Length: 327
Ligand code: FES
Image (cartoon, rainbow, N blue to C red; front, side, top):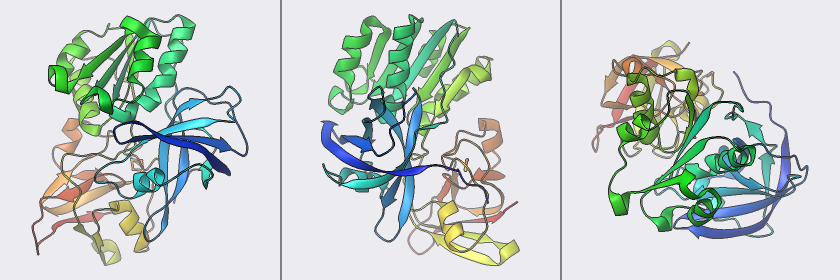
């Protein structure tokens, strides 16, 4: 089994306040401050109804020494419990967090940059935009949201970045055209994105179709949205003679781990592919929520990343089902 060697520490909540509809900004004072780089996140030990778990949150802002860091957490309607726990925090609460972790580094020195944030994905993009401004780089930030009230930091971003900030507000101008966005990106630009899986999938597909350099496309996802609402389903692993129910609020990986199946994983966010399983049989639809596979790899439903992807399309009394083989 693979796991991240993270250094855990205690942190105290200094302040928690709603900064946009459904988005709570939580300012923390970690016991062992570390300066924070753009793109970094922390893992947080969260308490769910029946167990403890970990969630990853981008660092939305930090003091120079790192003695204050801010997270911005959207309370997802179909939360698996993590964002509900975070929204229950208030000043004085203590919680366990890791030191800042980097899975989404900004490469300095590209001819130009396009940053794309969807919803609360702005937390990962905001620090990058500030750094690029400080460096005098050529950059554009596209910020996609339903309405201004739901878009955290919108006013301060407009103030900081002026014309370099392009808001795409669905309630005002309809859905953003990904094709037009990619068309506007210089061929030599690097694109960094963080947001819902559907938006990132579309950007990735359009980028691929345009025969652009895939290494110039970088993304951060915490793998929490898919094509279908999460529902309970059944997974069978004949090689271990195991069949388990995956509840709507847990991942297939978690359900298999709880059943004692020794699983490989790393990111738990649909990015690294380490949790890949072979699909032997399906009843229902595979809801691929990862950004690891290309569209072509997903289409035949032969493999899935079980940390985020799930089954959908079941009905009362007959849940969706998948039979898999692990490596
Ligand atoms: S653990 Fe990385 S994709 Fe599942």
